[in-house]
Image (cartoon, rainbow, N blue to C red; front, side, top):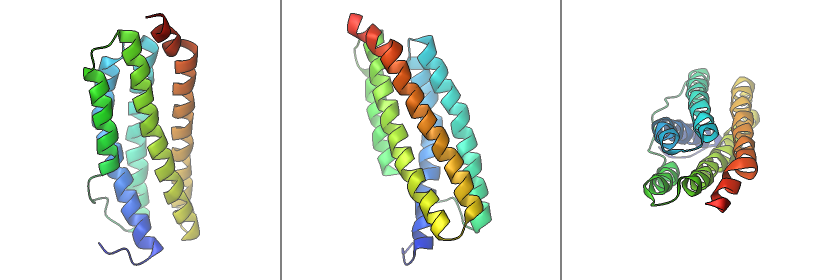
Length: 164
């Protein structure tokens, strides 16, 4: 697909996020299983449910703009997930692995925050206000998840990893 306009870029970036979210749907159960702290496992499971909603919202956006969700694989997310899988396989104390899983998850969150911020802005500039609202909702949820992971790390996981 040639990117000849902001609309083309908007669709291409939405497709990238759609693929990224679907990769996350495959990765989160593995991360939840690898987490030793029940609070971290629960956070991953909650984000899995949220990610399903994010895919549904993206489906709605594609329908609104009359575009297909099919695009190239998101290489950025592939790399971030591969790093998370390396952490899962790492020989580490469970508490230390949990701290590493949070680091991997936050890298994913920051990638998503950047992506959703861009497409929300494109939607607004293109006059796609309903799409912009849906994308803002997801952006807000990604930010909340990132903050939750930070709090979990600072109040529990990193302290336990330090004692390990």
